[in-house]
Image (tube, rainbow, N blue to C red):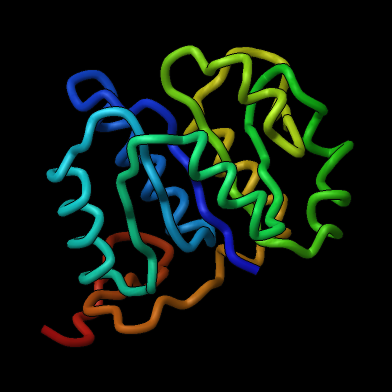
Amino acid sequence: MRITVLRLSHRPERDKRITTHVCLVARAFGADKVIYTGIRDRKLEESIKKIVKRWGGKFSIKYTRSWREVIQRWKNSEGVVVHLTMYGINLPDIMDRIRNAKKDILIVVGSEKVPSEMYQLADFNVAVGNQPHSEVAALAVFLDWYFEGKELRKGFGNARLKIVPQKRGKKVTILSK
């Protein structure tokens, strides 16, 4: 199963760190790709590509103008669209249905006010809590629930660097240059 994150309405001046963190969380917690809309940000794209080159994996980032087209193509390929929001069905009450669908998943996270149309287009509107929260935190919690914690032990092929877990201090092994 393929998992892609769709980040709506990136605004470089306002969202550069948040969108970067959406990408970092998506990659580290098991997603395959981020597609973002809004304003194209080549610095963001280069930053994520450098991280993948250093830390490994097959993660990618892509810009597109139309989030609606992304969703339509996803639905046409019989994948499911999961919109993370504070207004949806609570995560514990819906996760089994999402997991049991056994289809590719497009996870939608917003930035500015999400158009009401998104709530209609999504197959699942999922609440990670019913309070205002960060889209970065919601994505991390969703992916952790989806993978049942197994993503935390995932290996990343072609890595140049690898962290060596230890009780204290920082240790990074250089695998290749």
